[in-house]
Image (cartoon, rainbow, N blue to C red; front, side, top):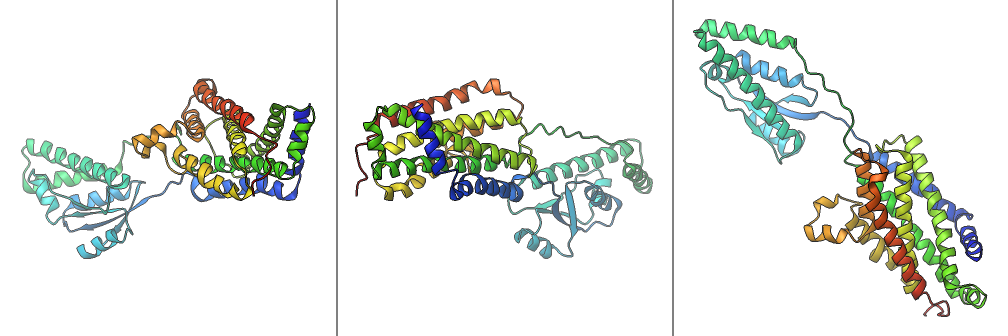
Length: 384
């Protein structure tokens, strides 16, 4: 019962005030929704590709027409080789290719022509373009080889190739691609990462309240009453946990049903995992609150705890991009476990399969909450 009174007191001093309502509910939901609007959504766009066709035969024109018909590329013809290289250097286009002079004649002779490609850096667009070009050129060579085996030469061979190209342009046989959306949004770790950063703001909330109680000797007076230290820490824990839970609910409701962001997993599963992370954050808050002796040190909490752990946990970039030794350190921060769990569930796994991730987060909370209870010294006033 004593813990509930302490929890209500913390709630009254934070969420029930205008500043706390803005800081812990409206601003986090608004910022996460803005991040979703800017970079969170999956955007489908065509890649600009520059080209020069110096061939005067039918195969060069057909190659350009085939690439123009693909939904992945938007071809932009250039007037000269210098202009083509310039747009590549300025990154106006994702890549470029040049169909050489005599392209059709080389193919009709049974040889493989060289199509030059230009790229500033290797990207998905340039790799797929090269694969597509190689596939089309292989088809041309197969067609010419089959006609040559029939004994066709020169004019008759060219006429037969042109008739074949006319039939190919009809695309009587097409592949139907069904996108079942069975992949994880590559930008989702940013959305979840910033959400976790706001949730860890509850750490500052908890520590600020405890520091104020210590400065005003409220905590010392509380300890003179028949209230155990465990009850005091549990009250602060419950109050901050309730604030964090409301924050999670508001953010999820706004991002899911107002911003219409598709996380790729059920609401309940995501909510449960974020609640386990909230427990771990409360444990960190309890441990740090017992160590901080001066309100002026509060600014160091973000630089020494929140920001580094978010960086290690993959809030700003995937953990897989970090060196091996940093990936091992990431196992000791809760952000890594909750982001990994949400991504696995978005990929098709269920909440029941996340027992290890939930266990690790609960272990974070239990250990750190125990440490905070032991090191809390209510009789110590704020150090000046």
